[in-house]
Image (cartoon, rainbow, N blue to C red; front, side, top):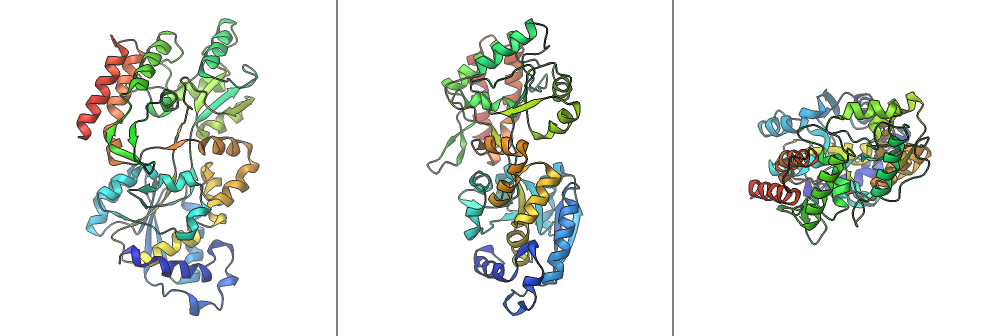
Length: 413
């Protein structure tokens, strides 16, 4: 069944299905519920399984639709869905990252989700992240982004600019208080375009050009512009000055910050537990700009997609819109994932946690990581060139950067 005719029925279900807040409110209202039958198969990862198990049990109790939760390795879900859904062996619903959207749509394995009047109940950046070619393809549940973690004992105040950060970091090193001016986890061969992107963005060098509606034009690589060339020169200089160090991996960066050897660490909420355990006094700041534009980090959003081949799309949409999109479930997913909720009500309630509030505030000013299929063609050349620049192996940074952008454009074309 096509989704386009389902929205009204799902919307009417909202009057009878109040989500995971109360079962008593649905008692005696069976006459107004849609006739949901059959079962749903949902692919999830182990981390979200406890929350979904409880939600699924209530959904079955209130609708009669059985739910089979299948635990998958999160990193393989996208490719497995592309392979299995066309054969009829895939799930009705799958958990996933927003930047999978373009690839999933390109392969015809997911269907649009009609959020309807629920659209305004989510943080706008998460809906934008789940939108591809003008249609929303997932119900978001989280926001994720990086920020600047600051060791307040070594850097009492937040830096106004990247140059200020570098100066403070170098002073701490020269005075013997620190070993590294700033920590950014890098790979010796592919650097890390994700963590370095806010600095690139501050030079006005987005990965792709933008359409009039603000969405990415995956056919046109934009980062080979003058701003990108300036960023390339900056990478080379930071490498020469040991501000960026290819010998410092992501694990080393975390361990060194935990040991108090640097005033700054460019990272996400996934490293907070270790930092707290070590007793490091820290603050979470916006990433300062190196160029004349804001240093906007990539924002990631996780959510749930509906299979285009699902024989039970009404039940699948009811489950997502009236259960997953409830404040209680979004809050529970936030607790097990330590990522700010996508639903505004849950997001605001989570502001009591200062770390979530700080990361979330920064995320709301970021930009969604491109969800276009062409993004798959970008990472390798982009990262390899960054590593070449940081290592000082590029004879001319601007030329190396331009060649990279042209190579990526050629692959996409």
